[in-house]
Length: 254
Image 1 (cartoon, helix red, strand yellow):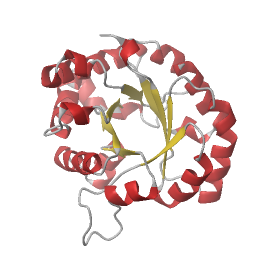
Image 2: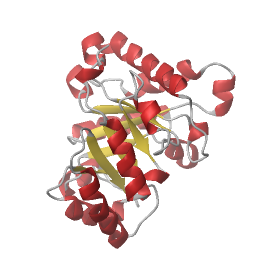
Image 3: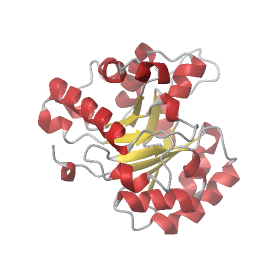
């Protein structure tokens, strides 16, 4: 394992927050704070904010992502947005399989696989979310759950395509609750994911994959989490809505 092979990525997930004007204002505030970042900086915005976010981030080191995509390129899917649509408007990243999509909107391991496939086919970089529920951690099956989620989502993904996949380990019990896995717990699961990738793609390819931690990462705990050998960044929820807090996490990654 060689962490120097990977550039950390700090990605903000705004969830269902901010109007287009608010999105542009936040990016305007954030740009000078992260201009010298030594890591990738991504902001994943609601669909209605994407145009404003892309315009506000133009010429900066901030990349814009979406929070979901459908598995079909087009069709009778009222209310959905396809990966080719995202690519066409200039989006570079898309979150797939977030626990809120799995829990609240019925995403399964199979539909996560389909969305991953569609996003890769459209030329996007995927932020693939995996993670266990509290009862699964209490049953000591965290690694089995996360390995299964990851393996199914990556079925059919080639070693070359793996270069456009970021994996975000997000223990469901730590999302939006203020609870956080310890740095050691986060690294243990991230290492298990990397070991699975080594089984599937070889150790060299596995060592190049960015594996983030999500789940209440904030300005106070980011440095400890990001110091772990297999934690290569974060998928940030609430703290990404505050420029100073998000910038502090970005600095911790550098």
